[in-house]
Length: 408
Figure 1: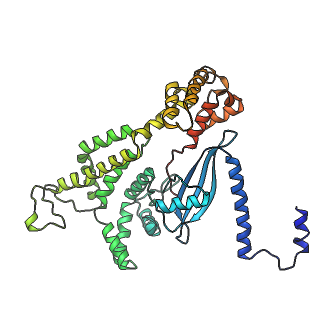
Figure 2: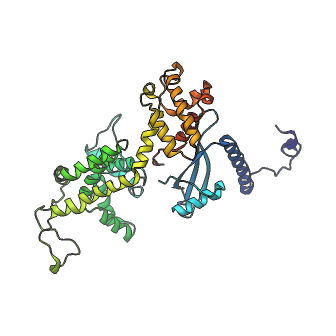
């Protein structure tokens, strides 16, 4: 389609100009990639943007890092553009930050980070055996052959799914592990299979009980309360469930009243007051829950929870049911102080008073459900100019991602 190129290549080119050389193909792909990245940069313009990063191994087991840019475009649409994929030697924070800086030519960046594959094919065969003996249901809608999911480090719901699948496929897992103990291709695999077969029932049950609560991450404060109740009152219920699992799979149940003896115990250090029940309750069950509460407090600090709650005041769902002038003003004042100076905050309060009467009751703004729809509607109705400070705050909130890495 380009005459200048047509005069040189195609019919007039040498017969060996097939462009199948790997070097030439890589050059062409690199040109395409640069064109795409240039367009993305123009699309962002002067808007604020957020950097999303995830790591994943490719088929050759090399660590790769993908970079996605999140921003609100000039028309009010929330965009997430795949910008680059970069090889990294490891996935430490320092390495990822350097690669991000090198790729984007910037000095600082924020990133978002993300054991069952070895067993997967063997588990499929074991599950097929369950089908043959009638232990697993078949038919449309049934989980005919389950999968052990790979848990993500930052995705608690994926951990919950993994634990549930582990329990659902428990007999298959044990069968595979037992086979690997005797038939594993190496000593390390046989040893790992043997270690993983110990106490699976107890530990999986504890994990599922904990993750059942952690799956409801929309309710952080109530989750902490439920975990506290579980810590104080849930052990007896959990122990009863574990006994049922042990009886079902013919696992020997230890005497809970017996003295607990660890592998490091010696005759001079024995403590007859530590029973098996005491060990599982206070050294395993309670410790596991305390760890999760500590993790919740670390991930969801009071300031972060406040940010989310204040941001909800901008949501248009149920005809702006959550709209609150003081909350929106507080959001800009506390969390976006670099984007709103004292004069901006004064004008923001004035705009919010008008916005409350104009937009909240405007027929064009009814039946919206999410903030991104509100942002586009402000553009469509030319209201973004009248409420430029509110529009700015909406774009900042949209740019900030509240997300959890999911399994690739």
